[in-house]
Length: 336
Image 1 (tube, rainbow, N blue to C red):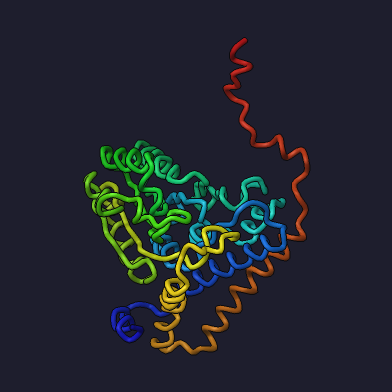
Image 2: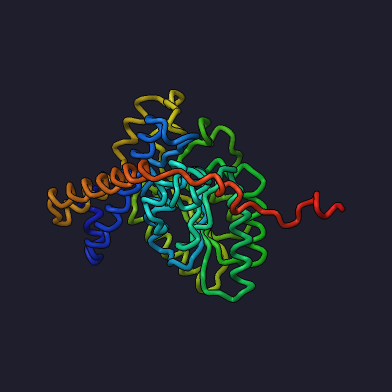
């Protein structure tokens, strides 16, 4: 498999592939450290890891500029890192500390970083799809040369906002890339058991949106597909749809043992680990094991340092509870 992949990338820059590998390593190291925070009881609430899905975030976001907009899901650490957010600010956010992306108020499922175009993660399944359509419509009305990327899971396609958002984007030819991160499960239920028809791409095509399906564990395939689709969007072609088939190697949350999945199935899927697959390609391209190991160590060290620093960071002062609270349009005021 690695030899075949090397033939495909012979004209590409190996350093670019190494950069992809480093990003995926950073995403995984961040999530492993976040899960440690859950275990240490310093991260409160749920953590939804995307371990095994790192190639989707990396390959897609490699085609987004800083001015482009990204919307994510409750499983959004990888997307946020790949869009350029600072790992220390993210770790502080998870621990509810000062200096977090959202001042320590949002936590894992609601990270946003407008400075890098990350409009926000979202704990409501499929809610980001209609927000993406709104953001893309604003870009079109203002005549800006940016695009919106909206990443969601396969469970989202069975909720109303999926139809509403895609329909609106298609009607107005909005500059938005819809990415279905298809890991086969809606929380703890196999999506195939509750999805009629031929799935995500077929539904997009039924609305007139060109759709591409790709191996979501192959970062090169994801990057190439996203490059083609984003190019079409930037040239005024309207919305596009990418279905990336991948697999969540952990439970739905850090507290989920995923006993609903056969052990043999998960073991087989670990053999398709996107990070290991790219490492094999890098080795076949001539990169020494020592350099690959150094990248692994660097990612782990970065996230451990971020965790320790975040832990030592103070909590926000109590007066911050009254900052960023909307008071415009208070019905109690307007009623009198």
